[in-house]
Length: 441
Image (cartoon, rainbow, N blue to C red):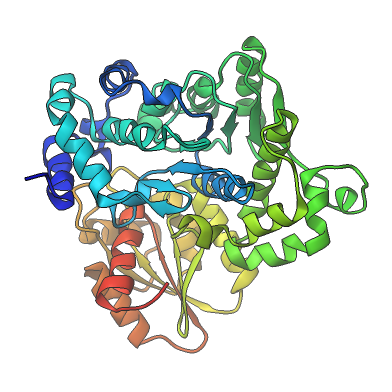
């Protein structure tokens, strides 16, 4: 009898080191194991054109938008992102649809001995599965897991375009303590002669490292920065000027928050590079539909994501200083007069001080912990918050679902519930909304 999906997933989690669960002890940098594993399964990564996306923040949404863009241009598109909120299959999407359970079960059953012999990590197996699933497609959009240079996804030898969305402080233990050091790791995805697209907000000292590495690799560097006022009235045939006929930016703000204007521009620049290569042809209708409906097209969730209007519930996986600042900016822009009630929990390797701007903006904090080893215990987190903000009103609940239930029950008309702090907390919240509460998100 063939292996079932739940048994395959259980085997992967129980037998392999998983960074999202186990933290640093599961981190296995380097490409030697992924090379061996891909060689065993026939090197499927050599069969599909790839768009490779790294960055501290924004890489997930850029990956989803890029996949939507390519799908609207009539291509069969694979999308690999990580981590997942609820179901492992979220990491592997073909034309926006998670791969069937049988795909994963059959792959694990066929290759479990090779996986153990090679000593591959959970993430490395996921990357190998992604390329196996995508090998017959027209193109694959691949999101880097951590860093870039030593990430398993960097097995890609010559992508269509390399993308670096942003540079900020995160995973410093592994990537370096300074922005230039982190930039060097992420710029490790740059390949000789392959064009590079970078976000416009990358700090100067980090950008200089990327520029230097791109120049050394004879890679043309494209900064995704448009003068919106000039382009709006310009006759130049840029992707951005094509979009303005549909008032794209007025539409976009409530969909994804202000930071997605920057991410949108990155994807527009990617589209221009792909157009120059002859891979796609820019078209206003396709661009507009790709960005206006990308959430439904690709399954994007958990990033400035509105789950309920009455009461207003917003989920956001902000988990580092840069993304926390963006979350606060969105709150000030879109719900400036509302009381903020937060369901808040973080990983035990995060610095609570990085969340201070959000905590200051919050009127009441329900302190929680997700049921994973990497979560900071709720009591420990509450103590850390009280040391930073001694008079802050908060309640330790622990369980994410119970915290949401209490927050919604006690919500006032002028309040906004924000679920944030880590992917694990948002994932648990997603389960509560979808599975336990039978809500449609």
